[in-house]
Image (cartoon, rainbow, N blue to C red; front, side):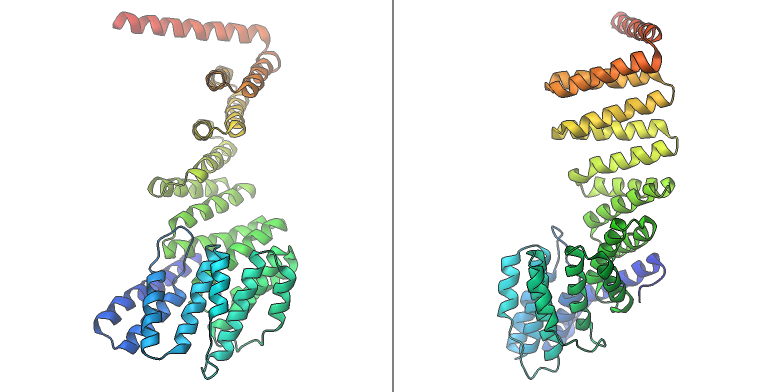
Length: 395
């Protein structure tokens, strides 16, 4: 059952994963061949794997398969090969996943043959779901004889059914299946629990229940922290922060975005950093922290300009100008728009130039008033001239 406290789940999961990691070198150094194989199998099966993040699992699988062959443990070979197929699937190497799962030979005499066969069929169905083969996946899952839920493999067909329902947009059924999986699956299925929590969160978002979705995604975030999968944590911080802002909890949103920003400095994710700045800007604006909001939005604008994203850039410049205008700081609003216009002219973004000129015109005529605006700009230019003259005299 899912622990009530995400922090408690994080601590328990971290301890479990640390034990898995430590067991392999201990068994290598002190254990018999059978003990080494048991440690390798357990670590390879239950250590979560994430795309584009280093993992020792591939090495453990190779070593475990060699040792299992030497010891005549065809049943262990089959389970390790099934795990390899799942890892290929997670990395979206679907041809390799299909080839791996098709090649698995489960010994009929193995005491876990029925459970392993159900796992094999469920993995084939999951690969089909990722290929959008929903009808074929549904037909495969219907052939599974459910193993006893006393075994961890019994939960994999349930996860496969949930994936099918999510991808087929059967959100009501998916929600029920995911709840069943999360309430019953054993704690060692860390990888599957994270996926189910994320899937349930996003299903609930589509159903308009942002508060409950936030709770499940935050739980997934804690488990990802326990696994040390920091790029994945960043994405969950962004999701939880965005949902926090959506339900009006802007203080929590700021905390999530701040943590994500700190992680981005250690594990750069350029594709997410502008989105994090936007999240900070919007939640800070809701809290009335206009300077923080403006700084974050201008940083997002800088990132978008560096990426050549015209839409992202202009939307952030306009956002900052509107913030200043609403805070009755028209000079800063104008300065923001004028600077944005200069950058657009330098980049030869004609459409951005046209849009920002219109925003300046709106600020002049509809917000400040033409006479007051012209006086403000004249004063700003005079201040700049005097500052420039003073700087020249000092030199």
